[in-house]
Image (cartoon, rainbow, N blue to C red; front, top):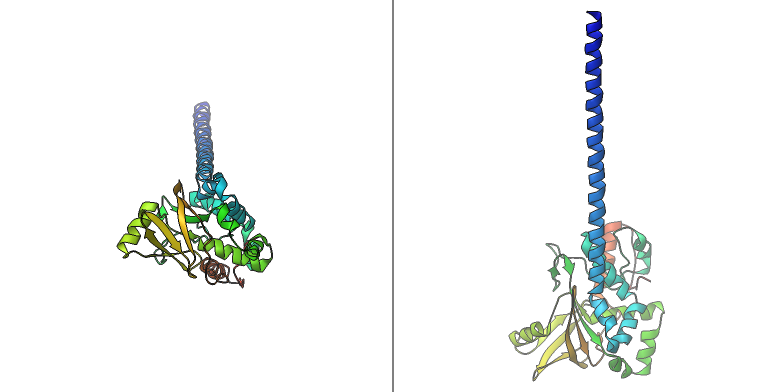
Amino acid sequence: MKLKNLLMLGVLSLFAFSSCKNDASEGENEDIELVDSEREADLRMNEQRLENERNSVTARIQENQELSTFSQNMNRNQVTTSLRQDESVSTTGNSPTSTTTEAQKAAQNQENNPDPATGVRERATGNQSGTMEQTQGMVTYTIFAPSNSAYEKLPEADRNQINSNTEDNRNVNVASINYLMVEERLTEEDLKQQIQSSNGSYAIKTMQGEEITATLEGDQIVLKDGSGNQARITQTDSTASDGVVHVIDAVLKPKDPTKNAAAERMTKNSNTTSGSGTGQGTGTGS
């Protein structure tokens, strides 16, 4: 009887050991599957980010040799960097940000808080207003990019300011770039429809905060800034994954380049989030 009990105990122990081993093996398999799934998700996200960069408004501007001056101006003031990071943010589901100030530089290296050099607005929520739209979770833009010849026509003092890296000039330069950007995809057809439905004059709200007025002369779209300077769209609908680029033949400028709605919004958002930020002015995030 004693031997029988020992045999039964041995069988039960072996069964328990086998069950524990099977459970451990199943747990390890689940962990491996989870790691593989996360790795695949990261790869897909990275591929999407690279695809967005290759087809972004930034890429379209850089590809056009007639826009090399405007492209350099964007790079100098870190606008290109910010737009690229906004593409990355869009693919991860986090909110992009706007133009930063010197007081907000420390936040630029934090995870999920990209270097915000341009005034890119946070993605739409239920209480935000404005003309921004979202396409597949991405903020979209319309950029009215002056041609090289448009910059060549500027007075020397204006060209020197654009090339200056002093903080005040960079703040003005960023505001001036934001004035040529709209947080909405507006194709040539969209613009013409808006002009016609607005009795021949369509006011476009820019990221800087002031408006550009669009009208039609025959079949050509004419843009006017707040000071009455005019530019014509000479190349239309260079489409991108995050918007559209139109080439214009003159440099339009805001009336007050010391103000930048996108930068002010960023400062407000940063102060609300951190509870301690006190940045002032427009900044460039450099």
